[in-house]
Length: 235
Image (tube, rainbow, N blue to C red; front, top):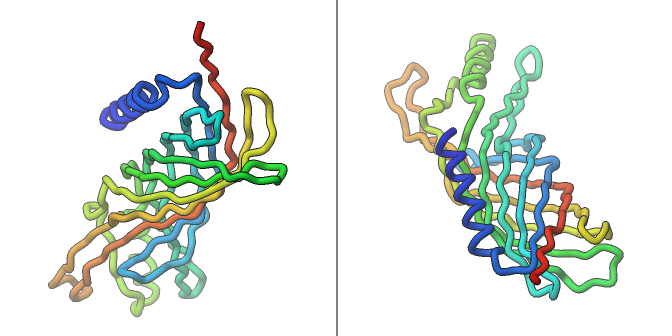
């Protein structure tokens, strides 16, 4: 936790001093909404998992519509779901709670619509602060006791990669608010370039040889954005 707090402090000090320190103000705010999380397990896709996310952000002021830089930090639940039918249906929801740091660029698009469209691209670094693999392992064990044909491949949290990275691509629409407040709705897709879980092949187990398991996250998000202006007037 101390490491996370230190990274958070350094993150915002760097952003505010090196990027926004020489501009006549900046934007800041919060965004949050629903996520459709999915994962590729050894290149096999699973069902999407309905989750939530939330962020705090800071963004350079863009009065001439030449583009803006932004930074954000937030909590995101990555994961996926599988459905198993024994005597009743069992849904196993794999969840990883990740603290996400993102830096990127944003550009508005000329439009005659009542809302201002924009697009953005960012790079992400994430740190996993929680997971439910032990709970999932207990449920898989219970299911295998009922259904001996169910494969008992339990994932060990020791193989979770705490640090991950990826990219985020998205866009949205800013609506008319006030002089110092702008609401928006935003959509993005966030694929990871690293593996959330990476386990080598394990031999001589009670279940036989367990193949290597590599898990990569991809998440679709819809966010409601509340953006505020911090104006700086030089005298």
